[in-house]
Image (cartoon, rainbow, N blue to C red):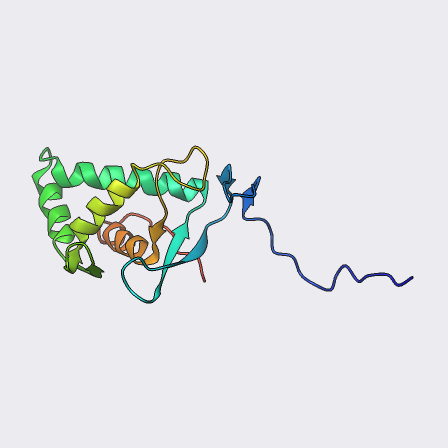
Length: 153
């Protein structure tokens, strides 16, 4: 009888713990890219499923940005943050039928982060598109806060 070479194929490390048949996981150890068909266009859309730590960091950052853009306690911060948010994001908003500002992207991301996640049990906040995460990173960079890494494809 022949022996099988078990080292023939490399196995990728598991990106999540407890993977069920329906794709629901309990946690995400490392961030990764997911490709899904577009609901409106012909090309695929790339989404980022952030690790639990990065997802928590994103949630805190978006909540803080939301407070900074509305709180008039510090007028200088209020004005500077709102000037940043009025810039064009470069993302075509299919629902808006125009290019979105960073403010509109922030509002959309904040709304996504309030919804329950379909595939990560117990997580509040959906996956972001790569373009949305890049726009959030633009805002974070402009105000001098560390960015959230976009994983490689």
